[in-house]
Length: 280
Image 1: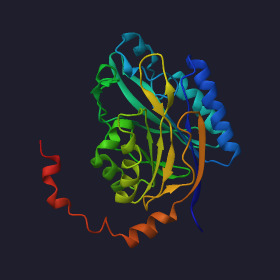
Image 2: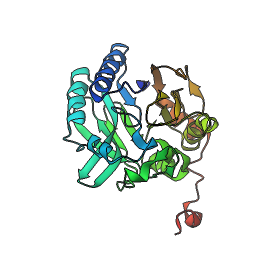
Image 3: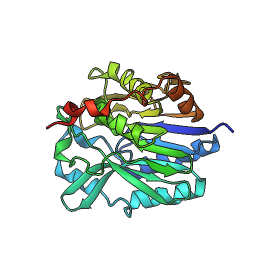
Image 4: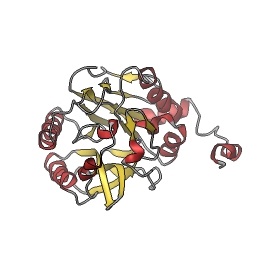
């Protein structure tokens, strides 16, 4: 029997306050479930603005425990209600002063499957992330969920092929890449890197971006969220580049085996020759 998973991505603009952002994402999850989706991922730091355009300590207050914080617990209840696996990119406080850019993974019964902490932290104009986040320390986990084995790689991570490969070696079938990237900086890479990672590692990738300009900077987030399959081909339509959009697509996970049999990249790896990649 074919293993087809209906998956969803939701992109949106900053509404101006936390509660309305949360309600909007709850509504998006319900609409995705009504369309038959069994898994959904939201954009990077989904319940707030992309505050990394500035350095302001007041945004530390947006961090919460993962699990146990109010946002994650609220969406755990919704996941159980809808029978929907959810990937929630949030700001995590492990303890005061120890903060991470994190994605919580919630299984379809509302249980906490685990979390990924963003590994690569930029510090560039418009992306002052080292002010807010420690580098992730959980490696590249793959989560067993009701829809299969999923991984997460957050925004700037996508520029580093090593983590993509680690997720593939860990057995990931779908990797979600929640992001906040703006026009003019690296848009051409948005159309290049995730398909390249999908084909190199023979799994599905869901790429999610924000949309719009926020009051904290000039970044113009261009949406265009999409799914790409293990052949490196975009599946269905790409989302709007200006407006909120819900992308729902069927992913045939059996394609992974077919592509890996055709292109034997995993068979022909030479890990014993790659020492220079990880040498200090």
